[in-house]
Image (cartoon, rainbow, N blue to C red; front, side, top):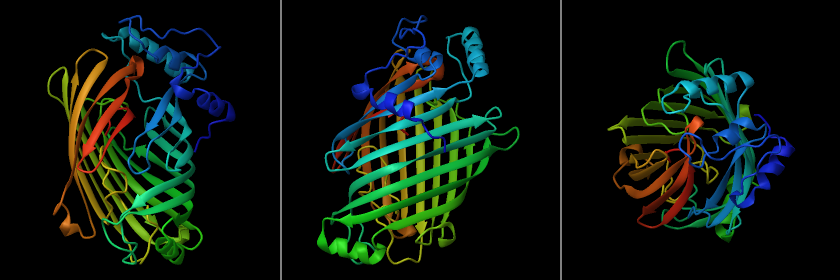
Length: 394
């Protein structure tokens, strides 16, 4: 994984509160000459250390209120910059449709319940998007309520157990495009080492019995992806399908043997010039003969408005749809609804469903990259939350 150097880290963290840092390399304008609107495209493109500071306002019910800052750096070579400028001059709307640039993100944050994290990540493409790499890692202290029974040793669903997981992690993958297609094949790797405890004395004893003083999970896997979307940051047309199968084995340094499967599909349909309909489906499964696994490894329903890890199972599925309305050249409103299910047996999926819904908005903050930022407001039967989001929210 690419490592952000200390200078980038200091620049990122000094931008607290979302205050923009203006590079001293050269003066830049935050007004787009095409429409006279606020735009960070020139700042991101023309400065060696230009980045988009993304304020992290955390309202995730699983960890409580909090905040932080992530600096998102977009990198271009001199050749890519020249090509992007040429394309921008030739396009009818002034926007350049480019292969996604290299992206680096670095930052951290914390919440009121004691959760905090520091992380860095990088995404890059080579050979005209023929090779893709992405990876991230960091250190975290996650204080999260879980509702599973740890292999039948604790009360079942509906009984919240607070867990505290402290440690470091790394996740990365590389993909190769099949010639003249939208298909990618590749490999994935993940490693995490955590100490897990609980403020519940019984749960803490069970965790120590099952996991010891610390626990490590490590895996290698295979993946395949189909991607015909018209934008990496904010697609409005096309499809994507992601398949990933991970093997957690002691041979790779894991304390537990289990397999995970992830299937994610997205589709974007332009209904009219200003309306886009989107669909997303996700399926996850975990297969293991282990009696007790770390509490956070099982998949969970991931929908805006439902707390993370609130509904876990060996088999998890979620379906959601979203409608997006471009009310102005830079402004988009959206509404979304989804349903998910988490069960211990595949045949029980959607015997009961957990619904979530909400609305949001986006502003095109960097036209030349098609980069959109905004907020989503999500609701479910038991909780609600709002999220500051880059992209569509899917």
